Image 1 (cartoon, one colour):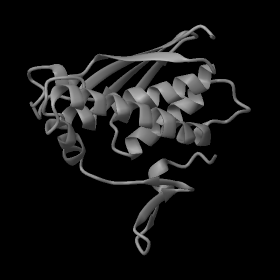
Image 2 (image 1 turned 45 degrees about the vertical axis):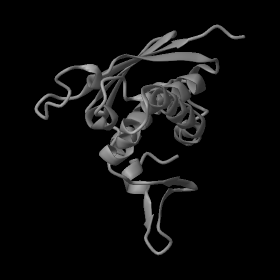
Image 3 (image 1 turned 180 degrees about the horizontal axis):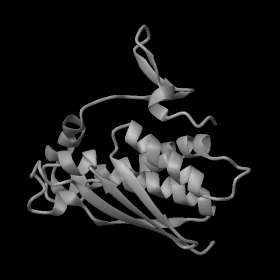
Image 4 (image 1 turned 180 degrees about the vertical axis):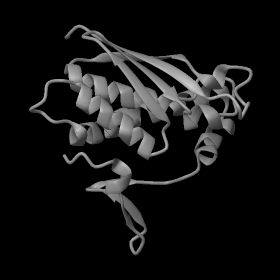
Length: 176
C-alpha cells in the first residue's frame, strides 16, 4: 500500500454516486444524523444497536486493516500510524496509540460519536470495533476491547469548548 493519506486516495465518483478507496465504498454523513438513530430507540434497543454497529465495524473494518497492513513488517507501528491517519481522514477524531506486547491503549480526541451522542452512555462502539479489528490482526489472537472513558458519559459533554477525549484498551487474549 502506498503511504498516501486516505483522504488523498478517496475517489469521489459523482457520476455513480459513490466514494471509493479501491474496492471499499465509504458513505459520508453527518455525525448527529448517525448518532440520532440511537436517540429514538429504547435503552435496550439502543445498546443492542450500538453493539451491532461495533461488530459490523470489526467485521468489515478488517478489510481496511488488511489493506493498510504490510505483511513483511512485523512492527505494528506503521499499521497503527496508518489506522490513525485513516481515522482522521474519515472524521473519526485524532487517534493516539500506546502499545506493548499484551495491551494497546487508544486515546481518541474529538470523537464524532461521543460529541454527537445525546444520551448519557458510551457512544464510541464503532471505535471499539475498529480497535478490535486492528489488534486481532496484529496479535493474530482474540482480543478484549473496552472503552474505559467516554466523553459522552460526562455531564459536561455538551460543552463545545471542551475537547471530547475517549479512552480505550485492548488486551491480548490467550489462544483458544
